Image (cartoon, rainbow, N blue to C red):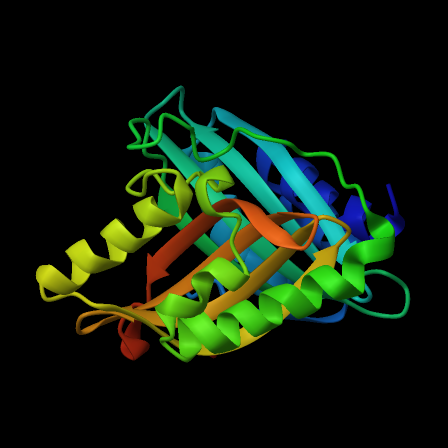
Length: 260
């Protein structure tokens, strides 16, 4: 594990799980800490104020980092949180920017409640975690960039088979069945309900080996969301997908500059 990935995991595990809030944020962040989790103010003191209260309210905190990887200065982690013995259970996806000393200087996240039942029978967390095919990192990132631009932003869903491995697609969104047909049925059902899915912009894309993640803006009908999509790629096609989305709250509730 490299130092920047270790720092991101340690901020989670030491700072939040273990309750060493000030010690962790001071140790693992840099000269600035710009925050995009909308309830948390910027800087060390913003983190301390929010999580000191969180730790007091939530004395039992089980946190597991399920996946994590890095790309240049950026780090991605996917985490499971079980708070107060099941009182709340959260899926979180986080993106960190780091400085030249590998300390964290900026953070984006998406948080949602865990959904146990799924159309596909897969959980929101299961599946491979090993990073392989490091030599294909650039090609896999280019594949996902083209997929986002063509299909998600461009709306050319008929082009999806160029990027997705048909029946081999394993789906971890609890509302979508496996395979390309499952994805098509889901998007069609949203449109029929008057909530068409539309990606509005791609904010970040990073990858390492067989994993690529994007952070983007999207809308479902009239509601705007921040969304992470995590893809696993084999032989030049998407074969597995995890995601997490969160409604963007009203601007007057933000404690910082917002989700992006």
